[in-house]
Amino acid sequence: MIKKLFFLALLFFLPLVAWASFPTNSVLASFTCTNSTSQLCPNGNWSSITIGFGDTAGITSNSAYDVTNSNGFLDVWNPTTFSETMEVYVTLSTVASGGVPDGIGFISGTSGTVNGYLITASSSHIYVRKFTGSSLTNLTTFNVTVSNGDSIGATLASGGTITTYYKSGSGSWVSEGTTTDTTYSPTYLGLVNLDGDSTSRFTNFGGGNESSSPSSTKSGFNFGF
Figure (cartoon, rainbow, N blue to C red):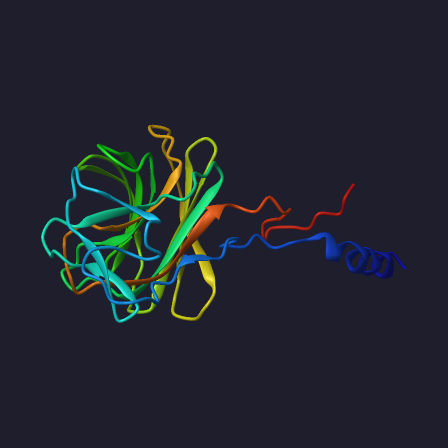
């Protein structure tokens, strides 16, 4: 009898449980636009950071890439600012051949010397770094095999907790782990190429303020008591 009551309780309260999900925002820029050697698309929605970077980002074959092939680029999505908890993600349609990681970031501004946090990937690692100008400090490294067509993402929560995510091809997003740093309070999202490698390609850049819909971890149920 007790066992039956337990299973009835599970059936009643199970709909209240929502698995934590990532991402909660749709794509902001798919880069499916006319080829360009001077800017990303949508036109006017990106600000190029020159201090510490300086290369020009462009579009080729429906992908973002480094046109200048010199010092790397950092382009910031400028239509709106975001607040914690915020999220960002991108698909690496071609992983950088030189092994220096490229990816995404939480950025403090749209001009001058900016700072924030970068989440970047090489073929064998995902790195979380804080930066100001051209100065980079590694916060943590995840050993992950990253192939063409894989995606990386992250959330930045209040208290400086950065959760890093990885998705293999068309598979499911997986949390790789967290790190915490309170040095900066960024409000923008960015796309970054660290080494000026013009072979790397980006598609499906997305993000925004993380949805506040209730969720739970995989470790238990919420019975509403």
